[in-house]
Length: 321
Image 1 (cartoon, rainbow, N blue to C red):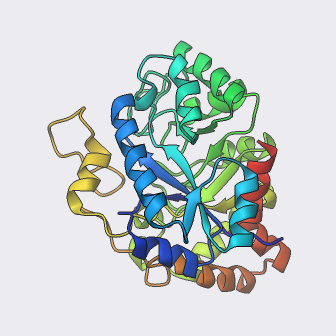
Image 2 (image 1 turned 120 degrees about the horizontal axis):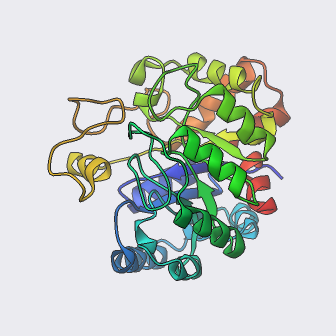
């Protein structure tokens, strides 16, 4: 069966966005439901999603396992998988790891750019690695079935997480630093260790992480994937677009600052550039998956390899986890 999966979106969720994802034939989307929110704020976000599920039941439903990806394919819907881009919802309480899993969380980043109670973010000057609390949380995430996501984490912390985790981890939305040297993009050495451990990389369409930013060409993006497949097993790569459709500029400030800073800290390679950057014209929304499919074939990937990158590799990762 051929699946199509975008393993990271953070859109301003409306019926229009869900319709676009269906037009793109997405069987599953991993959505960010919180960044810096605590546990009680998470509960409010889940209530909002329950309303979205009720009002758009012909298009989406809450996914919790690989079987829901299969169900979505058969029903021509999109299964929505919850993820956190920070560990804030578990606060300093390891017992909340199981609670958030029961609420439907299936991915959690150990940190978002900055130092957390669990690990070091990619914007910190000193990377001290995974903390004692982080080691315990990783064990608990393994036990209950939450994927460790290190997309915004620093290198040593990511390598630590791969070593500590008994299950493969994911970098759901980032690119290789050899192609474009953004702080959040990952080194060749890290990508090789990730692949050898069975972990997944989702290539990001966020312009600040692309060569030539929003002027990045489809050929350049697909060539980046091809060169990365020389480092990683092709079965360990997919797409995590980091698509942020229709989000107002104040949301990007919230993403980058949370409640830890009063100053404007635009980060993400976008210093002095507030707001969301314009998407490349060949990936303005998820329907750009059709362009990526053509580009991957043009750069030399087989039909099976292309299907793997567009979704089957993520499906297998979900199934194995």
